[in-house]
Image (cartoon, rainbow, N blue to C red; front, side, top):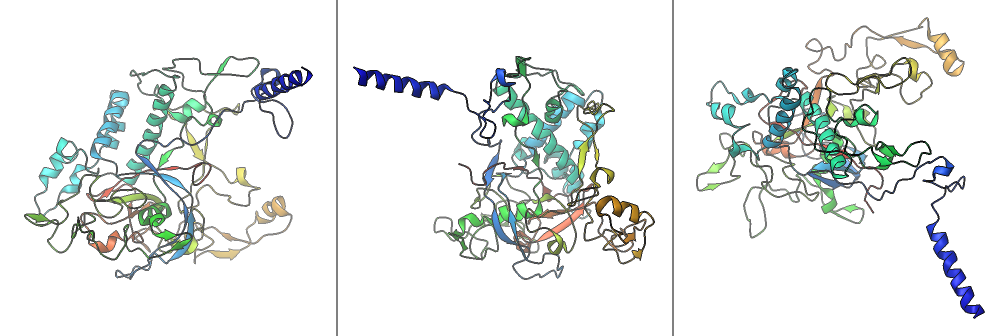
Length: 502
């Protein structure tokens, strides 16, 4: 009997210990306990995969030209870099996706801010050619249902960035509805629309279905969702050049252990652009221009079955599960173009184009009210705010090591009058420094260079290009305000936490 009582007592103790709340490993205080002040530890297991995204597991690879530089640009010197894991759109953004975007903008901003809608429209006139009849594409390509699954073109880099911000908010809004926190609020207009940053700053309340999540704070029953909950997804954005190039190669399917067994010229194995499998023998693996005057081959046996672009799910995906990483349309990436970027960029998460910003705050230190479009205003960080930082000082780092006044050959090495005082604040010793020139002579657009800080990189070949440009290492550039009939959009999202998942 005594033995049975001991067993029962032990069982009760085990149950009781199992019901105890998790405690801090450093202070011993319980989480999620109102009596302890209510510091919360929400349950979280894994980042949710957003719509149309696939996980691209990061790693190291040789970025840049790995085949002959037949154009003699010398702007893609090979360099080994490491890319973090990220999510990438399975396909290019379609015409129908962009029409959904335009419809939403028209419904929310169309009456009071019609220019917002107008600024988002793709430039359909990019199809015109003075010595060709392309008016059918001008009239029908964007809007006719026959082209709804074709990649959108005529979109500038700036338009693509705006689309990424809009998509982030729409995806997060649907997550809030799915979690039962918001209703389908179809009367959004002007600033009264769901914006992820405005919601996190406590400046969006419309459309709420409940007061929020249950709160463990001793003085409140509910609270808004926070980033710490892991419910809202990170931002959609354009990929960096390194991310796009890495994703295009699909080396995860071309390696054994830690050894890449074959150099890839294309997003698929081998050196040919036709499928070698018996079932599909001789079929083109991508949509590109085979030769002068040959956009699609001979009637009865069209080689890529597309005279211009093709539907986004055409051809075979690469080993990352991504479609049309070669051919169809070239794609915008985030980077600002510099001919020698591969010499300057970091070997981890390589990128040129950082302009650091922070939210605008009022005199009380609170986040400023959202603007007329419902967005939280931001500004560039100042040097005074970063006076003690060692990793950066200025907001705009586009020209760092290539175009800034330290690397400018016209900079004059003199003693700056304020240098001694500034140096004393930093490290109590005197500094010499350059006098910063009034203009950037190295990239003085149209005077000393055809490159400026608005030149953005685009990657990959298109329906209009020869096979040469389908090598992921090739790189070209265009002003961020311009668009063409062969550049499209594909977005990515940061992977947070484990690079490979659990």
